[in-house]
Length: 228
Image (tube, rainbow, N blue to C red; front, side, top):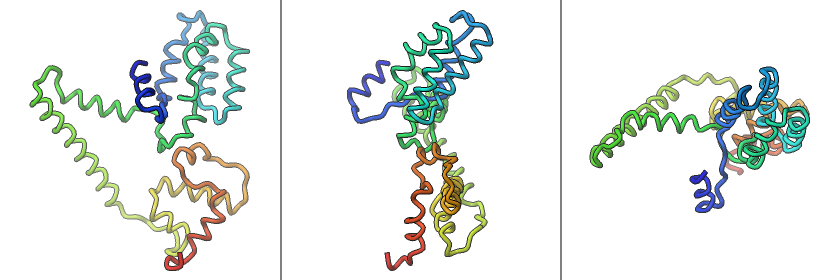
């Protein structure tokens, strides 16, 4: 908490987010039959309710799930939630997390993985020259692994599924296969004039195009390059 408060003071424009994975794990660790005098069935129901709150897709859904929690859960669970999680709900509930560009990341597991690798190489109590030597070696190793992964990915032969002058081909050449699949899904929805948006959360997190962008953007993509 001291570190988070320091960040708030020194970087007031920064958006502080809590790792959703660790939030749910902490809830599971604290909401137990022993600590809160719950039956196993009550514990299962409480954790399910807390998970629904965590993945709320709108503020209205959060309020609805929160009221359901207060109305149906034991007082010990409600007190725990009100004391620890409700005051900071904008930092971990999905509908508020997706307001920030996180490129789909909702956990700090990648950072923890890097930290574990550094701790395995950099020994505690080593001299300053040895520390920098070990740190440089660890960073160099991780950089080589990343470059190898990049080469492996770029060496793959791309199978072109669309006509060379099509809108789909232009976005396929500019985006990763995963991002392309999401954007083209929105193109299909725009063409079908469907009202349901199946991947709204992912598109907000990745700042990809939704179906509302396609009428203007499709026209732009079909315009010859020299006339733009």
